[in-house]
Amino acid sequence: MIDLLNVRGVGGIKSASLEFSGNFIAITGESGAGKSSLARSFEFISGRRAHASLIHSGCDEASVEALWNGAAPRGAGGGGLVTSRSINRAGKGRCQISGNLATVGQLAEVSSSLIQIQSQFAQIDLLDPDRQLELIDQTGGDELKNAKDRLAGFFPRMLAAEKEIIDLKKRKASLEERLEGAPERVRRIKTLALFPNCDREWEEELASIEKAIGEADRYENIVCRVNGGEANASLTDQIGELLRELYAVAPSEVRSLWAELGESALSNLQELFASVAAELGGMSREELESRCGKLEAKMGLLRRMKRETGLESAGDLLDYIKEVERDTKWVDESAPILEQRVKLASSLRAEASSVARNLRALRESAALEFSNRVNRHLSDLAMDDTRFSVIVNKLGKVRATGAESAAFMLAQGGLPPNPASKVASGGELSRMLIAIQASMEPDRVPGVLVFDEVEAGLGGRTALLAGQKLRELSKNCRTILITHEATIAAMADQHFVVRRAGDETSVSQISGEERALEIARMLAGSASREALDHARALLGAGAAEGGDLRDERR
Image 1 (cartoon, rainbow, N blue to C red):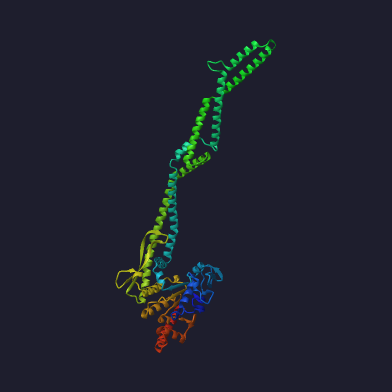
Image 2 (tube, rainbow, N blue to C red):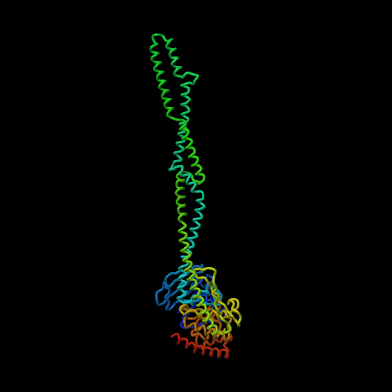
């Protein structure tokens, strides 16, 4: 619980130090004196959001330091704890936990087990469905907590299994769409007997064959001209005839020489033309044209396959074949995998549903127990004609937190129950808040409860009963009440008063006659004899009850 609170530059408070020793502590003061600055200080040190507007007009920063006796949250040593927080006008803040720098989030986490601040606005939080379910769950104890933990453990596994099924189905559908017509394309591509860079080699081979066909055409033309046609003698025959005519007219002295040279030349020509004929005979034009046709057809199919697949090379088509075969194999093998995943998801869903049903039953039991507790406290708060109940509503599907929500209901004057937010007045919500706080499990109550004018809207006997209930709460935790209600303030076993002089707010502990004067002011606005007598009577009764309370605490 908190033992010391040092406040610097918060709201109207330039400097204040509060040392707590009581169990039920009252903080009072006139309206506008600065009690709200103390409330903001408690919120600030508990890790709530803050702004530079919080800073006192005469200070450069706001800071709050708290000493917690017996607190040992995560990250702190045993036996005690000091937390501090500051913010400057630039909006930059600093937090420390036992002298170590910390984030606001870490401060809030540590503070959540140390202090809880209840204000009139807490009624709004009280009516939040998630908060209502949380209160029911706290009542259910370890059995309900274990059921929640089990469901929370099942749920991610169930979601993961269902997501895997969805992903498998999406992938299968996508692959089946992509594979439409692919097996036939692969069959045609395979007829090409592709190999890396074959498209380039085939182009070179086609160019070579076309060149060979052109050369064959020229050879045939030469041979035709050499051999002549049916009507013409061959070129060698014509040359032989010319040579014979030449020999006939040649002078006798050169005739032998010319004949020798002519016959040699004719023999060489005959040998040349025979070689040409032999070469032409080894290059079958029909074979070349057949090879050219087959190659052009193959290359045409290759180009078509490239267009259909959007690929650029034979190597890409070879990779396409592998991809299609791999994807086809996956699609074929996905059916048993999908079936297995569906069975797993169904099993997990069934287990989660079973745990969720058990959790619902535990919540319904806890809701009944919680309702009975709250009604007992409401009866103590003069709300006998009001029946509190909790409806556990089934949701359409199982979530990680369960398959139900909770709704706080009130039935008044024998009328059917309605949501508390619609039928309860502000004063009734205040008492309901106190009753609910009193109904919580002792180990769920933080070390310090701060009530900021939560009794607003109450008066007379209801205020007295509310004070008694708040003092009862202080048996389990240090209870600090910022209040305007004299009846409740008189019940406290420690009393602080907030006063304002000019723009300065001071906070001091009061007792004895000074406290009687403050209670009288709260009762009548002045320290008249009647008001002082009434105040002393209240303090006398409060002191006696406070002694009983301290005995119970010991």
